[in-house]
Amino acid sequence: MILVMKRQIFLRALTLCLSASALILPGCSTTETRISDHPEIFQTLSPRDQELVKAGKIREGMSQNAVWVAWGSPDQKATGVAHGRPVETWIYNDYTYANAPYPYPFGPFGYGGYFGGRVSFHQHGPHRFAIIGDPFYDPFFYSYIPPRVAYPSKTVTFSNGRVVSIQILTPPR
Image (tube, rainbow, N blue to C red):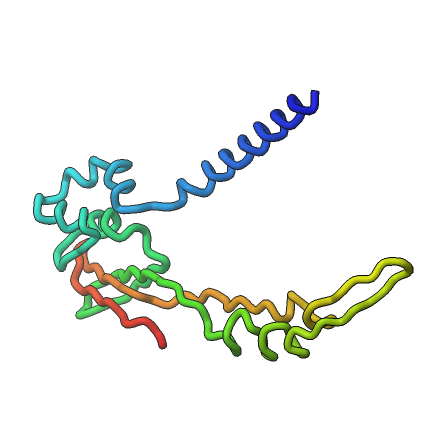
């Protein structure tokens, strides 16, 4: 009876995990998945552009569809005018972590909090126990995980649906 219940719980948990991963994983788009999902776009490219797209590279003169297959959907789009013609710029972001105010995971007062890993003993009735570290330690305050910060890493500008400018930006320091 207990074995059957454990098996049912395991099967339900497994089903939940598989369902969650099925929802999360399709959001990950790679060059290969874009090529396999949209072969009609890939087949319209020249053999030279097909090789570049497979390598995740682009060149001046490429179409917007080729850039989309190579790099995916941009994080932002900007429109404007250059030399009297409308242009559209696609902006792709990368991510970094903001600098922590102290070396993670040691906290502002070293490993162990304010008192450097002090051990204190307490007793409640017949029970004696020890607290290792700072009794005032607050994990929400001291376990600082720096936030992820987006920054533009590359841009590509189109005029009449063709690449006219490519910029690869240096990451912030």
